[in-house]
Amino acid sequence: MELLWRHAVPPRAGGRGPKQKVSVDAVVAAAVALADRDGYEKVSIRAVAAELGLRPMSLYTYVPSKEALAVLMVDAVATHDAPIPADAAPRDRMGAIARQVRSELLAHPWLLDISPWRLVLGPGRMLRYERQLAAIDGIGLSDLDMDRVIAVLSEFAAGNARMAIAAVRGAAQRSDAQWWEEHGPLLDQLMPVAEFPLSSRVGAAVGEYYQAPADPDDAFEFGLNRLLDGIFAEVAGSAD
Image (cartoon, rainbow, N blue to C red; front, side, top):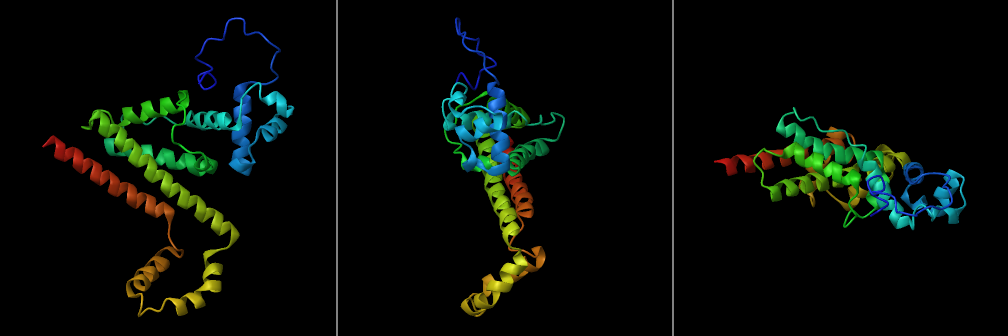
């Protein structure tokens, strides 16, 4: 907790010691850069120390463990959120909550490897939550429903981001055209149209439209608009 709020917590009296070569901020930034480049599985105390030109054991004077470092990394990334314009339409402000969550995950896919459950709240994530609440405050939602809306939008965006990241990684290994060229003939035998008429019809329409199994970007826009429709219908119904 003190590490997360290190810029707000007064330094301990008598806490003098050997001068540190780098700052905790620099350690966290190096860990984020490493995760962005090589993935979260490559982040370790030893690897981050190497990025900074430090001995592995010396890094423990900055952070006690990889788990603590992960919490600091998540909070540091959250500080980069842009403010949601207060003069935007309520629907646009609400949509911005989901778009920011999705954009962050696409920029930092390793965030999906860190459990969001019970992460200690730091200044970055608290500022994000405050901005998200401010974006939907006063539109007719109760305090509890404001939190629910943020959770639903965030979880929808995270699920879609996971699929979008998987699509990018899959395409890097093999194109959809190559995959269908290899597996299509066998699938035609295993899944005859007569046995799966709806799947065949809808699957053909999807494939023709996207030229791919799906389009996560399109699914995000469709799903977000349906979510916003439902939320605002509920708000309007409560006001009647």
